[in-house]
Length: 213
Figure 1 (cartoon, helix red, strand yellow):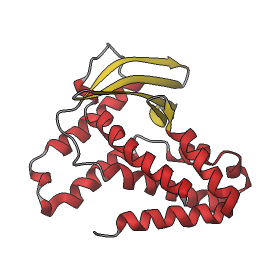
Figure 2 (cartoon, rainbow, N blue to C red):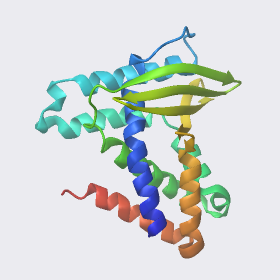
Figure 3 (cartoon, helix red, strand yellow):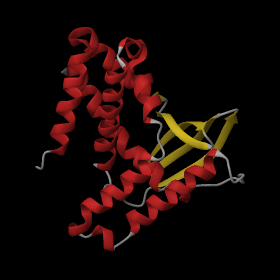
């Protein structure tokens, strides 16, 4: 339980920076880019997210759920959840049946969504400074800083090109990898409670997030 709380607290802190980086990415510095590179494809998705979040019509209480779902549809198209879920389990992934793997991918995706969308209303004049992108083959790294008043947080996106589309498979926030942090905490829980225990804890966390206050 301690490890799970640590990982949830970390993700809660991380998720606000994650969404800030996506929402305000276009307000940072830019460099020239071809139509098919990682930055350009990410910017197209971010443009669409920005339109949704800035829409006064979608900010009304009656359309709050619709607003969240519209953002989630775009978020789901930006991340490689299959790769992220597999990497977060390390060697444990290879011991699972295909059914267990599929179930875990779904849980992992839902967990990210819950933390991500929970921060949708937490923004006030933040911006992102874009520094550079490095591309090698089908892998890319995009370097940014989130600036929030006196706070400056470096974020590095890691992306892979799959079937002509660049998808995020990891992020480093203040040099801390999202996937490495997950793997460390997941492995700690699995050692004590097996994979079934991890599934139970993630399921409980998702259900708790979905329960109205």
